[in-house]
Image 1 (spheres, rainbow, N blue to C red):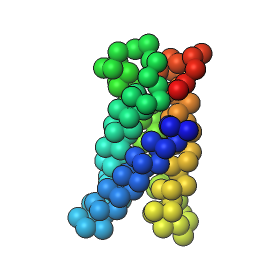
Image 2 (image 1 turned 45 degrees about the horizontal axis):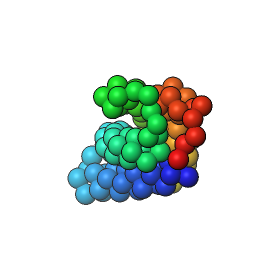
Image 3 (image 1 turned 135 degrees about the horizontal axis):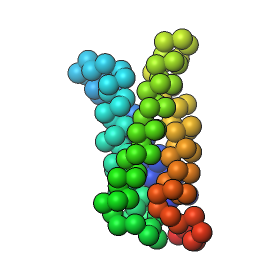
Length: 125
């Protein structure tokens, strides 16, 4: 439940930041989504490390490197699906981003739980 809460908070930051970049500064959609995703995912890492995966066996530097590698997969999925949905469907970019966030959130959580934080056999508090 904590990961979900942190995910909602950081996703709202992601959505807000990408909207500001697009609407106020005219930054290209895919560039703004990629940039805001990495800002939000970095905040997600530090919050998750502290409150979700606090039993990690890796030190913080190595954990962050693995976290970013999983995030790269997430940003690739995000940008690819954003391009598909915005180009080939009538969905607005915000609706597209919300739909994609659910998919990427599950993939990221499972990847970090099983591969990165190495707490899969421990009780998560």
